[in-house]
Length: 98
Image 1 (tube, rainbow, N blue to C red):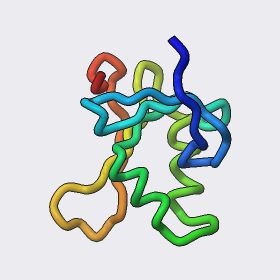
Image 2 (cartoon, rainbow, N blue to C red):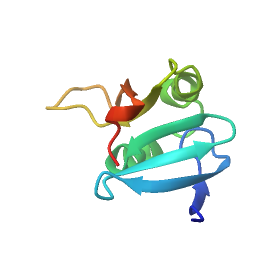
Image 3 (cartoon, helix red, strand yellow):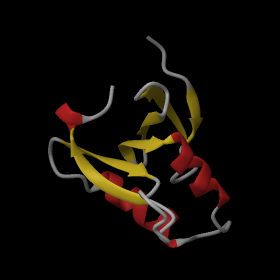
């Protein structure tokens, strides 16, 4: 099955992705950042953050590449009204949303 292409939200390189979690998230396959999942709402928020190199655009690609074996980086909006614009964590591959 051919995956759709889109610019990676972390590094802006063309990347394949597939919708997961009832189309609420995307699993990206980026040649620069590696595999990661990002919630659609978190992707929109990342795009709306200040243009240019921000903490998130610098840190997240590194975190995606540096995942522990058997884990994938997931990026979401914080729960509640946390002032941090995004949250991330490593999730076991067997526990990732499909």
